Structure formats: C-alpha cells, structure tokens
Length: 454
Ligand code: MEV
Image 1 (cartoon, rainbow, N blue to C red):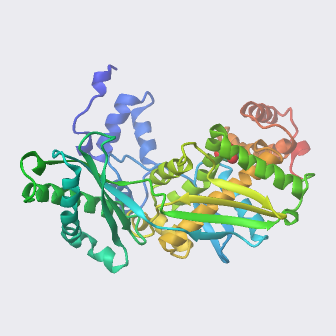
Image 2: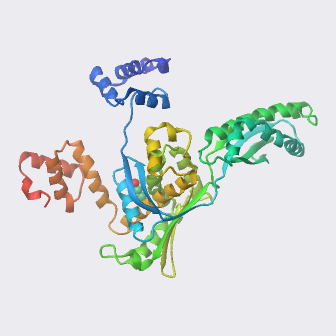
Image 3: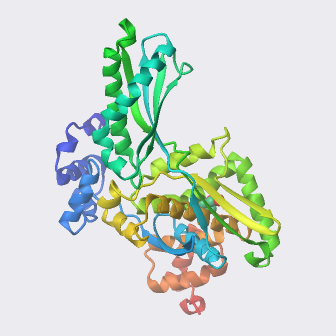
C-alpha cells in the first residue's frame, strides 16, 4: 500500500468501530476481523465505564492495560500507608515494598513540604522603547489584572489560594522589547493547570486592551503582542523533602557485608550520582520508577512531574542525583528533595475510577500529604535499587521477576512455572536459557520431579 493511501481526513469523526476497521485495513496484515476483535476485546464490559474512558482522550480505540499494584508498609510521619502503583516494570513494586518494610523497622520515613508555589508566565513584546515607561504602566496595570480575573479566582481565593504575586520582568536578552508578566499561584489541593492558564490568558487580554487605552502611551507604545500565556511546569518552589535516618549499626548485615561497609558503599554510590551525569540519569530514573507509578495511579500528570524533576536536578547547571546520603557521627541519613506539583482534586483524580480509588486507599490526602507520600516512594525506590547495586547487583532480583514474564511469553503451565522457578533459583536467567529449559521439559529430557520446588 502506498503511503498516501494511509492519509485520512475526518478520522476523528468516524465511530470507534469505523476507526478500527480503517486502521486494520490499512496497517495490519493479519485477518481483519480477528484483528478488529482483538482491539475490541479490551473494551470495558460496562458500557458507561467505556464511555468515560473514550471521553478522556481523542481518537480512542480501546484501552491499554497496565498493572495496578500496591506497596504496603509505608510508614511516613508515623502514619501507615498502602501505596497504589501503576507500572509495567516487573521489579518496581517489589523494590518499593521492600524499601518500605526495611525502613518501617527503623522508625519509618519523615517528610516535610517546604513550599507550594506555582508559576505562570505571559510572554509579550512591547513596541515602545523606554522600559521605564513600561514599568510605570505595569504599576497601573497590576490591580486591573487582579481585579479583572476575580470571576476565575474567587473560589480558589475562598479556599486560601489564588494569585500570590504578579511582577514584570524585562528580558532584552531574549529579544529587544521582550517582557514577561510572572505570576505566583497557590492552587490548594488542585494541580491547577487549567486555573493558572485561564488566569494567564485573561491577563494577556487585559494587557493588550489597557496598553491600547493607556493615556501616557502614544503611537507604537500602545501596541503589545502577547506571544503566549502558559503555566511553567518548572516549580522549584513547590518542594518536598523526605528522609530516613538511623545509626549505621542498625542497618544490619547484608549477606556477608557488614553495616559499616554497606553504608560507606551506599554513600559513595550516591556521591557518584551527584557528580556524574551518566550515573545521575540512571539513579534518577530509578527514583521516577517509584514516583511515576504513584503519580499515574492517583491520576496526576507524570510528564509534568518528570520534566520538572529533571530540570530541578540540573538547577546548578549540571544534572545531578535528586537524592543525597551521608554518615555523620555514626548516623546514616538518606534524603530526597524534589519539586512535585500534584493535585488531589479536579482533573483525572476524580474522573478516573481507579485514580479516585487510589486516593481513597491513601486516606484522601491533601495535595501536600500526597507530595510527602510520593517523594517518599521515590526515596524508598532509590534505596532499594542502591541496596541491590552495592551488594548483590540488580540482575538477580530483576531477572527473577522477569522470569515470570518470559514464562508467560512461552505459555508455561503452572507446573512448568514451578519447575522453572526452582531450576533458575541459582542459575542465570535469559530468554534463551528459559526457552531451552522449557524445550527440554516439554521433550521429557528434564525430569519434572528433579526440579520441583521443595
Ligand atoms: C531500573 O529500572 C532502575 C535502576 O537502574 C536504578 C539505578 O540504577 O539506580 C536499578
């Protein structure tokens, strides 16, 4: 089929079945009816529920399933949580659970929200020449901006949030005549993206109108071009810290590694991630394994959380670890400081039935409490990864989890699974070694009884 035959106009106007039929015809080689059936087989059995999912995004054909699991035993500020996690990587929930259990026995995690400020910007070009004139116009404009968006902000104001600061920045380094209205917001328990963007777009309109009417402006000075009005996903002042601490000897032994050796190696591993961007990227990826999983489970925006976290990790010009570790006076401390702009009301948090179940599972937390929980899961995840890395290495645990997935690919029966688990307990797991094992088992050249779990 030629590429231009795959071009389509009005795709979004087709019904869901028509979309699938078109797709199957143009992009799949297998039997069209079977392929279409396969897509449809993932539709929700409850028509109303499916309607809800269809409405969340555009051109929805079906649902993409991801495992929803929980990591119990998270003791945070003396409160015990069972944390929901949505993630496809097989060892993540197990690692978070194991990190949580480890620290449960050592007093749990401590977490504190440092600040909750969010930022929005109206970027604009002013065609006048004298910045001093623009600044005095802005003094006149500022109360009009705040008054002019009262209908948008009144509910948030009532809840103690709203606009906290509005300032003008002159940015000739971007281009001559470039300015920015920078606004700070408190969005209470909402992530607040729609709220902030609505306020900013209204700011832009008020700015254009007031500049045109301002009596001290004449000619070109009355002209403003709003380039864009949008929130910033960089929220370094929406910051939370989580940490664990205990005497080094309370860490216990790790196989044949004693507590002091473990703690020293662990602190060194973090030091490497603070200095080396190659390692820092993997280190932080491990942190986001935990963070993203809870962010998704609670219906929050993981892209916003990721981009902000990585920008924060590079705030001094070099990409570094988001966590830190030290040993001081015989005390081991491991901590994370990370910006997390989260919401527990509005958006998908209430719309998605499982997001709302996740929040209920967490005791319907405030946004600040959720910041503490999610930063802590990131820290626990990072702890579990580093603990494996500086002791046994990660592959042993990782491949054990992966073994289950490989066995699924080969349609292994329950009996074959038990045999494989026993067989690979002390052997290297790879796709081909599992295939060979199953081949031998199925040929009868490996005795079932000789490898059964005892
Ligand atoms: C794997 O998804 C994450 C790790 O690579 C993180 C790390 O290396 O710290 C284990």
